[in-house]
Amino acid sequence: MSLKVNGQTYSWGDVDVKIPGLVLVVQEISYDDEQDMEESYGKGNRPRGYGKGNYKASGKMSMLRDDYDDVLAYCKAKGVPFYGLEWPSVVVSYANEGERTRIDELKKVVPIKRSHKAAQGDKSLTVDIDLMIVGGIVEDGVEPTK
Image: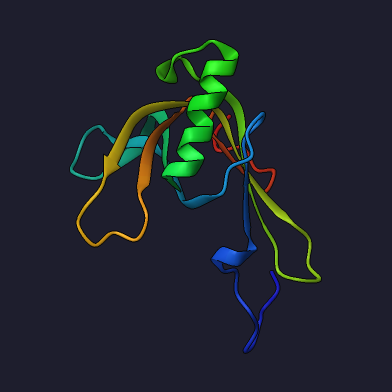
C-alpha cells in the first residue's frame, strides 16, 4: 500500500462512468454491497463459528433531466421499456494524474426505481435511478464473493 503525505486524493473530477450504448454525464453514482453473515452457536454462550447467507448489491445514479432524456431515447431505439433495461456492465473508473486507472465494475445492472423532483428555485432538474446490481460489484479486479 502506498502512503501519501500531503498528496492528492481522488475527487469527483477523477471519476468516469460508462454504460454500454449510452453517453451519459451522471452527477452522482453510489453503490454498495453486503454479505449476510451470522454467528453459529453450540454449547455455551460464545459463537463456535459463522455461516454465510446471501450477497446483495445495489446502487443509485443521479443525472440531469437532459441525460435522462437520452436514456429514454435509448429505450425507444432498442424497443424496450424503461424497467426492461438491463445493462451487462456499468464501469466506474477513477485515477489521479500520472497513476493507473482503478476500475469498479457493476455487473448486470437493472433499474428498479426512478425519482423526479422539480421545485421553485431549482436551477436544474435531476432524476435519480435506483439500481439492482445482480452480478455483483468487482472492485479493482477483486470479486466480492466466490
